Length: 133
Image (cartoon, rainbow, N blue to C red; front, side, top):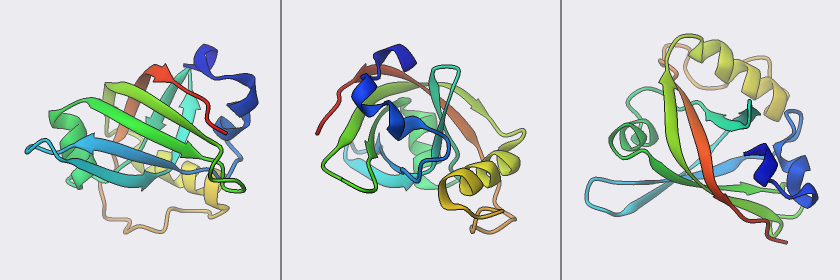
């Protein structure tokens, strides 16, 4: 994915940036569902971390095609739409991963969600990226 990101928008993917993404998935009835998510770019792929059992977890597991909108927190009209597909799912290290994302994106030592949640790391490979300003 890194080679698909225009230089003009590469800053939106920096780990210390307070940018969130809006994850869009497809429900069983074909309708769409959108959720704000923390993310990180690792090895050219986006990694997200929903809680096990939440709608985004269930829909990505059932239908692994997604769309994301990565928004510039200072200028929301400047954003990066990404179409992609799930290429990996893992639970091991999920809690540490979400806490690291919370620290990088929100400046918090731990993610504010319940510590009893089982976190799942989804790896997304981009199939199309478009820079919007």
